[in-house]
Image (tube, rainbow, N blue to C red; front, side):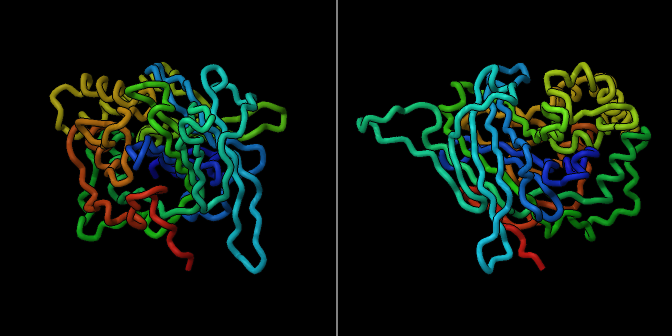
Length: 358
């Protein structure tokens, strides 16, 4: 519901469906999280000529300057085991190569799902070359879904924005609120990057992408994700109108989708009746949300809030933030982080272990 199943192609293969992304300060660097395969986390990662990409903009133009690219091998099963594993490889691309999906690059790190992998450089003075990548670590595997949302509330807000009416929550009882993603798992990619590897940028932009090779050659971008609930609240993905938000790039967002987002926010805010100038409010919100990139000040505590948005932590109440940003007034769900599946770990790989399969 943040970005769960937000495109036709993602619904056809949940392994390529990005549900949420996060960026925050880790134990020793900047952490990027890309969650896919929501609602169950079964089936692993797509392994047939597919790419999972972490896109990083270091100069504020919403165009990637660094790409970390994960690829996965097919699932294998150990003798007498019902839980398979996948081997993965990580590559890094910079500059023009960061935007070239045919660039081959060299393998930076290899690992297997469920186990952390780390790139360790030789100690200074031992003949090693201390370049980008030292201390980088990665993990991929099944985890609890850290996202939570109340279905009745999000439906009311989404309907109100679309119809230009105040959210109808007359039948909603906060005491009976429930997380529609409770007890569900995802498959997650967690990458912790030393700050020095981010090109000296004080602020970065981040988004996650899944890509699939086409039968005709080339690549098809299946999903992209940054701001939570953007597609859910504004219906930017509309196959009937030949609108494919997930196939476009963040730098194009304001031109392609700005008018639609501004009109929707103005409708919703006017109906909610909490802002004096809905049109001006809508223009500000459009500029906050587009381009669709999570901005993060390197080395600081992440917080996705109404007054301050700096990355996104695993326990931020993203839905309530988005509701208030759009409508200009708070809309509570009756839930907090305790409603999420599992409790995030304080240490790498940070996500909670997966909910046991029944």
